[in-house]
Length: 183
Image (cartoon, rainbow, N blue to C red):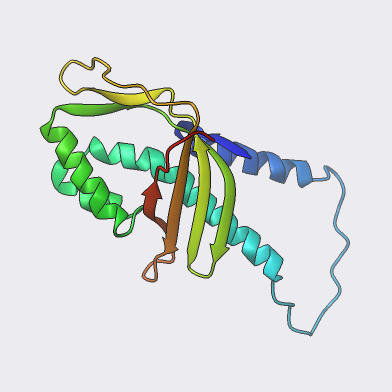
């Protein structure tokens, strides 16, 4: 199970990548000179490709949460455009509609979600993610006073469908479901 606090994803990912690269370095060990090879390079293995696609889906899903919260801080006229980078229909319209209703009702959101992905399935240009989020540090608040109205739960099942956008090749969330119960 993968546990990620979305607020720290960018920094954590960068640190882990840098650490992995430094860990692979052998210090003073030099590479043997490469011999000339006139044959074509071998194509990447499907395992490598599927791992890369899976990681791209995980990254898109994990970044979806903080970026959707960030969109609310922008002017309402830019919400759809900001969310279009992370969400596809029907989720895009669902989110914009919910944001407009919350704004009209004087409701703001607070906190950070901890993503705990338990499975990722990729099939061509579609993917499904199963998550057991910790939303116990999130909720709704009065937009004017900041007084908390609700608090989320520690073990909230989430199912997400993602699609790879044909125009830009990026993975985007197309549907989020909260099936209820515990995980």
